[in-house]
Length: 163
Ligand SMILES: [Zn+2]
Ligand SMILES: [Zn+2]
Image (cartoon, rainbow, N blue to C red; front, side):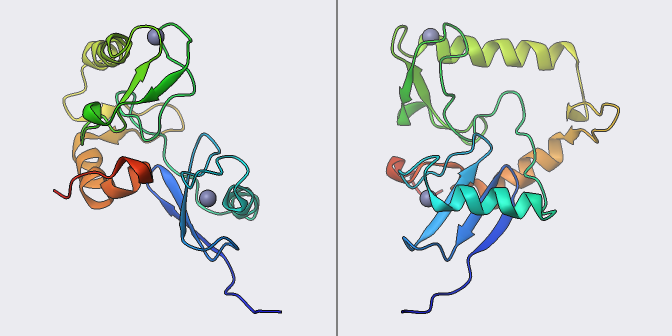
C-alpha cells in the first residue's frame, strides 16, 4: 500500500484549504459545506473540515453581506436555481451568478438590497458593525483579506484573469 501524506486543513478567511486527500490536488471547502473540486459535498475534504472543526480548528469568517465567496444555492430573490456568470465575477463582490428565471436581474437586486442595508447601518469604519459576541469587520480588513487571498474565492473552472 502506498503511503500518502497526512491530509492538512488550513483556514483561509472565508473558506478552508485542504491538501493531501486521496484524489490529490488542493481542495477548497466553503461554508456551504461543498468543495469546489466538482465532488461538492461528497468530497473527502468536506469530512476532513468537519473533523478539523470538531477538534477545535479555527472557523472561517462569515463573508460580508455583499460578497459571495461561492454561488448561492438558490436565487436569494426568487428561490429558483442559479448558474455561474463569469462576467459578473468581481473583486469586491466575489462570485458572479445569474438566476435561471431572471438572468442577471436578480443578481443586481440581491446585491443592491445588501448594499442598502449596509448603507443604512452606515458604518464609516465598519463594513459589518460589531455585535454582542462578534467583533465586526472593518473596511480595511475586508479589502486586505480580499487582496491577500482572492484567488481562493473562485471556482476552478471560472479561470479568473490574473490581476
Ligand atoms: Zn474536493
Ligand atoms: Zn431569481
